[in-house]
Length: 208
Image 1 (tube, one colour):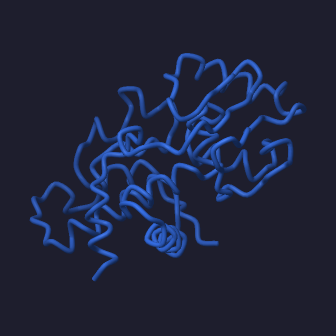
Image 2: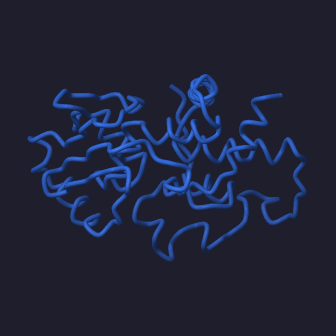
């Protein structure tokens, strides 16, 4: 599978927004977006007026990179969202938020989505008592995500849980960090997804 191997902070700078790809570094003064709030590269500081298509593409790229997806994966999720009743853009964000790696990150079991994805791949989590090592696994309301018992005592998880102990709770996710569990209460509404993206532009892009 294709992987991005360059500095991830360049991605945030390209999108002009924090995508929280570096964990706790994103909350400090070392954040690249705060230090250099312009696109990377020789012409990064030049002013560019985007076309309608350019605006739509940037919103799609921002959402795709926020969740760490490849193009085909993102397009697949859009197709699933379009098939569901309701507003397609909001359906898309709900599907993306229900990924196992995202929920592990939201619950505070990983410092960033890339780290949470790696932890899922290394089989550190269970869903409803069964080991799941697929980051794209889509969780449903009522599902219980838990750190495996033998992983719970590792220095890695002890450090992560300690750092994230004060992370604000989410209304749609019930988290018990002492036990290393998170229960999906319901899928998040649009107001509960803090991604600064105009999803209707993504819908317009794929509707052409």
